[in-house]
Image 1 (cartoon, helix red, strand yellow):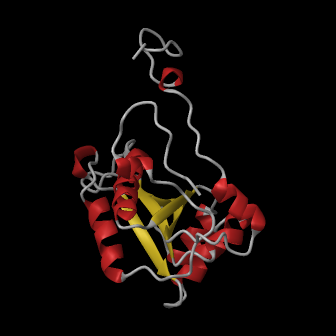
Image 2 (tube, rainbow, N blue to C red):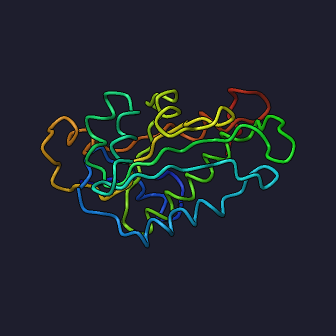
Image 3 (cartoon, one colour):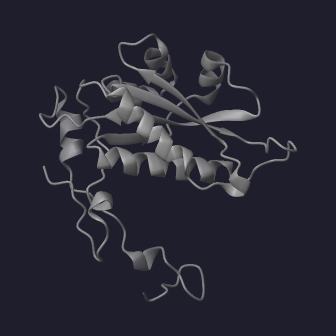
Length: 198
């Protein structure tokens, strides 16, 4: 299957080949690779260098964390995510540690950290699929997440199963060509909604 982006303008190949599968191989992810993924997240920029991200990591076949994360996912995500060798909850701490004030950049900064993680993952031949479909309250109960923090996203990490697995519907989703709206529809100039004409 061809998943490389059909770009309108040149970009780095690492970004063009990144995609999010639904069908994961059960091949384990080496611990050294996981450490490097979280090292990449560690060095992401954040407002006031607050680093408001926290990750809860479950490795399939090692303890019960993977299964407990799976139980926090929305049912449609459970149907495919169980095969991913690594499941992660991406959480945000919504207050600055120094003064307890709200951190309006917390979600943005978690996104930057995960963005760095997925670029590192792609460079290592791994695939990352983020999910917003989860129950934050279930995650709070399951992992004792404090009230000033919230599980915002779940992340599946592993290798794409090139055979398509045993679910034809998911295999078809993975085989669908990638599409994006053109730059003119989201890069604006004088007014919101008016193309910048790049």
